[in-house]
Image (cartoon, rainbow, N blue to C red; front, side, top):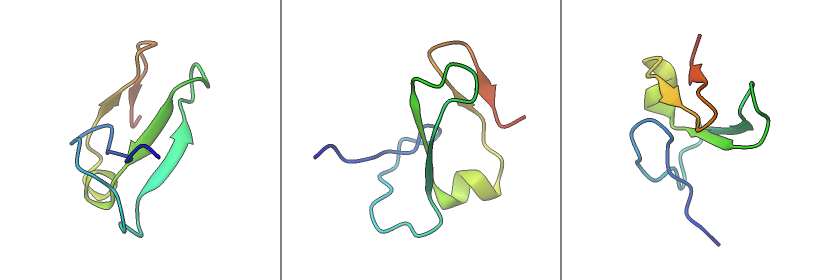
Length: 55
C-alpha cells in the first residue's frame, strides 16, 4: 500500500484526521490529497491536467 502524501506540502497524511482525498475537479483522473494544515491555510495544489486549486 502506497503512503498518501499531501499534494501541496508533500507531508505524509497517516493519522491526520482532518485530511481529505478526492479526484481532481477538472479531469476526475488524478487523486488529490490535502492535509489538515494545507486545507486550513488554503495552500494551492496543482494537478497534472493544469488545474490549480483551491479556487
